[in-house]
Structure formats: structure tokens, C-alpha cells
Length: 91
Image (tube, rainbow, N blue to C red; front, top):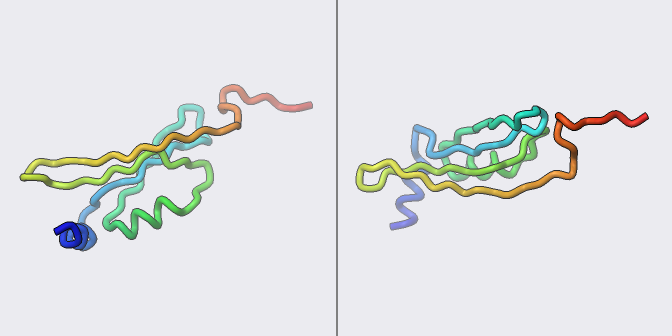
């Protein structure tokens, strides 16, 4: 049953989820979302490095008993860099 559900998800014409990245090059750490239609596409999106973006979470959508559901996978990350608002130039 699980293999059949995964196969159906991979054949979807619509986005089945989105990867949410945090922009680290802006003072407000704005979110940037990238939708995906298959699990293979999700893996490609999430494994590729992007300049100034940090993966924050992955959302996967589904319909369970005709009710929309979402699974959220969140990630904790940190940086040693200063926040853009606290930048100081060295002499």
C-alpha cells in the first residue's frame, strides 16, 4: 500500500509540497519557497547548495479522507556570521 501511495504522489501534475528556505542575505531573513511535484524533485532541491539560502523546513501535502493534511519537517541551523544589522567593517 505504501509503495502504491508513493507511486501516485510521484505522478502528480500538481505540487505535492514545498521546500522553505531562509534568505541569509537580508536583514529580515525572508522566506523563499520552492515547490516540488515528486519525491525525486524534492531530494534534488533540498540537496543542492544555494548561495545565501538555508533550508528551514519541508512541507509535504496530502488528502486523507478528503481532508487536506500536511507534514512539516523542520530543521535547526545556525551560523557564526553576524546578522546583517550588526555588520562592522574592520580597519
